[in-house]
Image 1 (tube, rainbow, N blue to C red):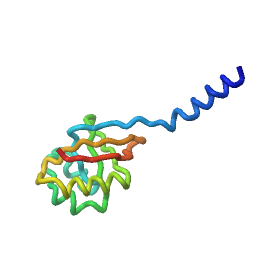
Image 2: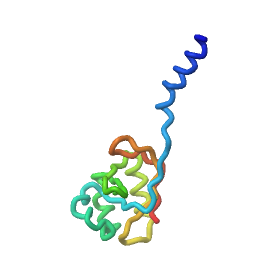
Image 3: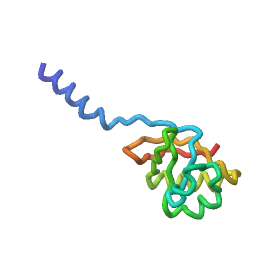
Image 4: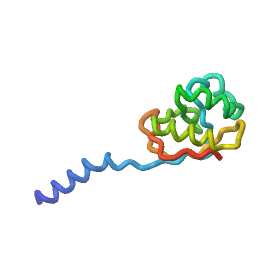
Length: 112
């Protein structure tokens, strides 16, 4: 009986350690420096501008309008995706990661 209780408790303690990855599809990727000026129409934000403002970091605008900031690794992945894209604007992406409040621990970023 004690062993069963200990196993159950161990399982409950480990549960928060297992986080499920989420996928955000067709979401605008925006740098934090330009967020306020492009939030109304993020599709007009250019790749060139986004790369110039990389120092502030990146994030995505979710379907509900909330801005979710990328972690440091996500910022690096966003820069790589921006450099690889042929798009000049309409920076829509697929982002995979784990949401932690208003931040995403990014696994991957690919610009559509």
